[in-house]
Image (tube, rainbow, N blue to C red; front, side, top):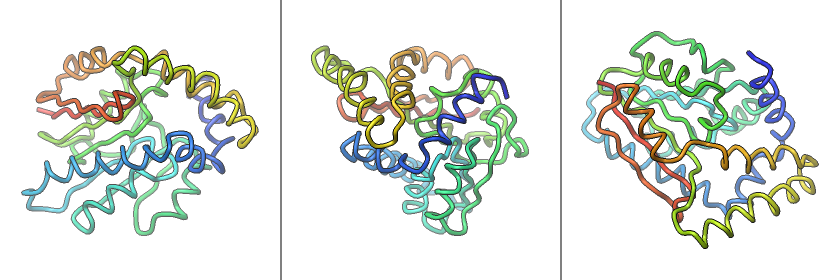
Length: 233
């Protein structure tokens, strides 16, 4: 793990105890809706699947995406979660029973090729140091015709809404992080990672160049968040 990745892991370790509370509060509980909507869309795509589905939740954090997937797929899926922060996984273990939680590196996933029907990453890809390399790993562990799914922040399309949103992210959110989590830097990083992340068009291009087909994009909450779904040939 390089120095930048190590710093990001330390950052997430440092805010793990306040992570869920601040996520829900700062997003006005929209983060729960975004994950729930993602799980429902995926369930619709696998309604006619005859065998048990295997799902990997990459960068699972405290397990909220796994929780949404478990609720939608019930006993019809075997769900694994992987994250590099053990502190975040400790919280996930308290929420989730009988699900597989693993500490690991997304650059070298500890799974055989063609293992999963779905690989989903919720709010994790902007933290990847080398997105293209990790995308290759994700594709490797995904079954043929399996779904690769990214739920991630994006830039709102409406000019005035975007101005208000970035003011909130850059000025208000870090101050709340300072007050509650005692960590201004972690929540300023949230803003900077969103601001510096690829455009929606660039993400689609990266997925297409990696060989994914039938790419679909959904926008939530005025374009604050985008859901990308691609299929492995």
